[in-house]
Amino acid sequence: MSTPQPSARLARAITDALAPAYLVMGILLIVGRHSTGDWAGLGWGLLATLFCGGIPASVRSP
Picture 1 (cartoon, rainbow, N blue to C red):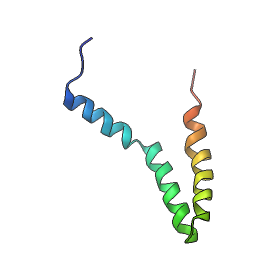
Picture 2: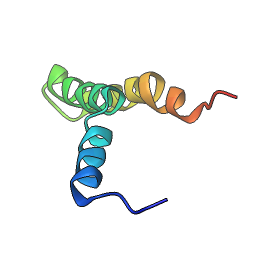
Picture 3: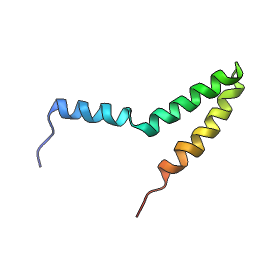
Picture 4: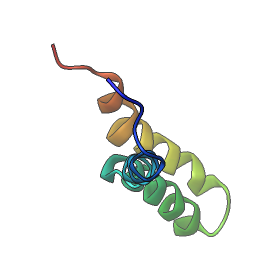
């Protein structure tokens, strides 16, 4: 097996970074922060991120 081309590695990194699960978790944090107008909303965003992204990402299918 050969080493992938630099362009293939870059494409893979971009694809992984922009995966829907990561985007949803980031959006939940942003919405939580801006929903209350102060930093208390960030806690709600973290809680939502945990349940919507963190826990499902930690469960692996057999």
